[in-house]
Image (tube, rainbow, N blue to C red; front, side):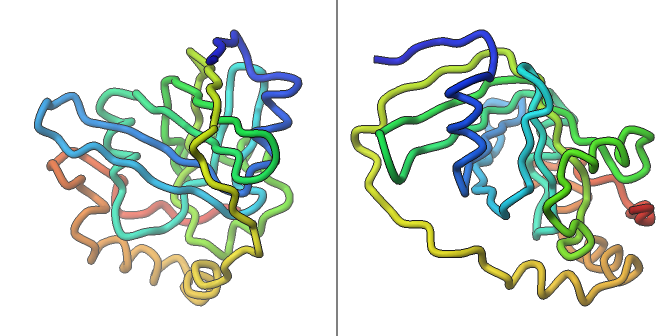
Length: 195
């Protein structure tokens, strides 16, 4: 039976921080807009900032739907599933914001991710989520799966790009500066890295 929590602490925090993958869901306000659901990984790219705030690193990719939806309405849900151990699903519902590379808060936020080389992955922003509702439910139907290792392809590819090449990559992608539904996505041109 599911329970509601006021904050992320104790057992919930431990569970969240131990999972190698989580999922994000966002949607535009438009009733016929595209709902976005994304898997997130890379060990060290997620952090609990305090009991009511979490953040994750937003890396280069072929679209920017999460950023576009957060810029429009801020709604976001994060979900973790236990693929090993006791069956558990945790959802964090909240209000999110993309903090971009030229934001004065960006450098301070990066300090919460000391175990990941952010220069290797084409870092675009830090997604900060203010927690409004935390719920857990059983994961009885979630299968057991094993975590083997991190993939290196993303980091290997983007580590070869300097800031100019990364900016050019974003400029040529159809759904980076603008979402699938035409909402403003990642602000371009990409500000230079100061990290």
